[in-house]
Length: 183
Image (cartoon, rainbow, N blue to C red; front, top):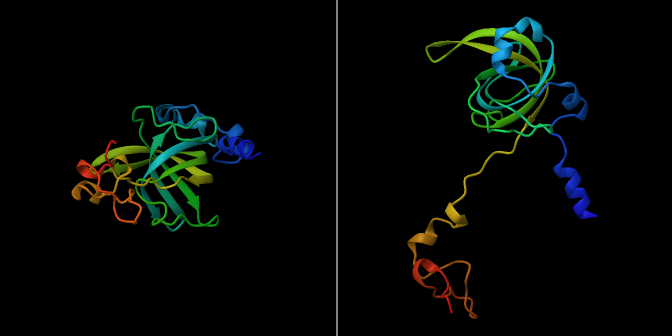
């Protein structure tokens, strides 16, 4: 029973099923930039890595690097860089706090294409495709782990390993770098 629940949960889409079915997932940002009038008001499902989140008078605005998504809305991340986009969230729908939706976080969103907005990346002029967010999913923050799962002190105290203890509860005298003896 638990395995069945896990299997169903593993295939759960990131967004509403209706939105996932209605929205276009397989597209290139360059097509939107070339012919924006053709795609205006169409629903798109896209992923991204947040560059910046701003609070504006009209609501929240996310600038993100585009990442294609699979049929469940999970980020693909295998394609080369295609560009950036802007996603706006109306003030009447709520607030996307910049401390939560911060640089480096990953999102999947369903948004209606509004058009192209000129902006700048540093000193360079840039044309951003703009989407109005219908629904957004913020992915879990990636955590940094120690190499091979060991904490830093593991390498600096040879002969002592916090995971191996003798029968008296004292650290087990391991071999080099704290590994247990091979015998």
